Every structure is written in structure tokens, then in C-alpha cells.
Image (tube, rainbow, N blue to C red; front, side, top):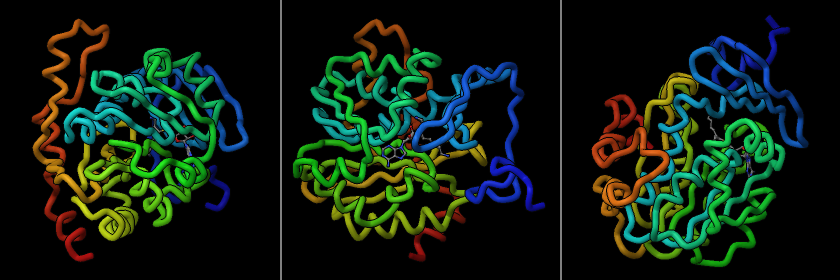
Amino acid sequence: KNHKPLYYNNPMWPGEAHSLMVEEILYEGKSNYQEILVFKSSMYGKVLVLDGIVQLTEKDECAYQEMIAHLPLCSILSPQNVLVIGGGDGGVLREICRHRSVQHIDICEIDELVINVCKIFFPALSIGFEDPRVQLHVGDAVDFLRNAREGMYDAIIVDSSDPIGPAQELVEKPFFQTIAKALRRGGVLCNQAESMWLHTHLIQNMLSICREVFNGSVHYAWTSVPTYPSGVIGFLLCSTDGPCVDFLNPVNPIERQEATVKHKRELKFYNSEIHKAAFALPSFLTRQLMTL
Ligand code: AAT
């Protein structure tokens, strides 16, 4: 019982494990921050694993990256300056770049090896780094945000791993305070916010911190990602005070922009209907989140 490797008994989801058939191990390495593994699965394409946890697969990455990027960016008019935390695979960058109003994107990823490995094995995601609007900062997001200029971003997207390891501080109050400071008035945050089946306490904690820190609106949304534990993942959407942001009714539909360009890659998952639907919560979750 005590000798099982971490991936069979991860404290983030004790007593369960998800399996994918491995066709071939493509890369195994260790950075200063985490163990990195890339393998070819039989049904989900190539898979990126950090410290034994699936971060993305080629088949279902669209659901995660499109939602985490377009939920915030389609909720405000004409986003220009965007910050991405984590996201070293480049998939979120790829999605942000669809927005023609965007002029500058900073990305702060702690682990340069993740970026380099993804450039080799996941070119359809790392293509995001090739856009001239993107500026890469390799370092800890906590330090980056401490030094960020006040009010400089229209949107901040936190595409970070689970809060064990390098992402530990990214769920704590001081981190959210630096995010709120770096956003302009009426700016938006979209934060990876785990699974409603597995992490209600973590979601409750993050939500109550965000309600204290952000004076605008605070909402939880979710989507289906079959290869994440429990098959779903959520997002916390918050806005600073100033012009009111109505997350539930997108004002900046990306489909309209997309229709006018011939893209190499079409949106696979996101649309305005799914945007609205993402905020509909199961009754048990609504009850738990109301009793904060
Ligand atoms: N889009 C793929 C999904 C991810 S990747 C999360 C990234 O966050 C990793 O590349 C990791 O190196 C980076 N990261 C972790 N901590 C920090 C930090 N302190 N500063 C900057 N970057 C960081 C997330 C998938 C979520 C899976 C949920 N189970």
C-alpha cells in the first residue's frame, strides 16, 4: 500500500488513476522543476505529462486551450495586452493570437525545458510562440507579477499546473492580489480552477479569495476534457472594478472574426453557445459555492 508510485496515488485525486495505452515513449527528462514525459498514446495522440500528471493530449487539448483563452477574451471588447502564466506548450498563445485586437502578449513560464520539448513534439501548439506579438519571460510567475506595471493588462490567463510543485503559490491570496493590480480597470482574469468532482475545497478557497480581491464579478465555469482527472476542468473568471464585465454574455464573439479569415486551423470546441453554457453549474456545486 505504501509503495505505490505517485501516479497511482496522487494526493490531488487519491484512490484513483486514469490509464491511456502507451504506444511509444518519445521523451523522458527532468528539469529543475519537474519530470517531463512525452508519449504516443493509441487513441489520444501524443501526450505531455509533468510529474506524472497529464497536461495535454493532441486529441482533447482544443477543449482546454480554446476555453481558457476565449472565455476571458470574448467577454471584453477589443483586448490588447494579455499575460499568460504557465502555458509553456504554446497552445493558449495560439488561441489568443486569433484575436486581431491583441497587440502584445507576455508569457511567463517557469520551465524552459517544457517549452523546448513542446517545440519538438507538439508543433501544432508551440506555433503560438512564433507570433511576433509574443514575448517570452522564463521565470516564476510570482516574481514576474510582483514586478509587473500596474494596470497594464486587459486580460491575464493563468494556465498553470496543479498546486503541488512549482505552482503551489499560484492559488494563494498574495498572488491574486498582484494579478488584480496588474489588470486595468474592468480587466479580466481566467484561472485554471480544477475539478468540481475532486477539488471543491480548493475551488471554494480560490473563490473566496477572489471575491475578496476582485471588486467586479467572480464566476466559475467548466468544460469537458476527457484526459484530465474526472474528465472535467473548471476556470475562475474574475474582473476588476470599473466597466462591468458580463461573463455570461460574450460581447466579443471570436466566431465573427474567424469567419472573415481563412485559418489553417479552425476553432474545434469554442463557440458563443458553449461560452454561455459553461457557466451553468450542477446544483451540488451551486450549493457548495453559495455557502462560502
Ligand atoms: N496548457 C497545458 C496545461 C498546463 S501546463 C502548466 C504549465 O505551468 C507548465 O508548463 C508549468 O511548468 C507551468 N508552471 C507551473 N508553475 C509555474 C510558476 N510558478 N510560474 C510559471 N509557470 C509555472 C496546465 C494543465 C492543468 C492540468 C490540471 N490537472
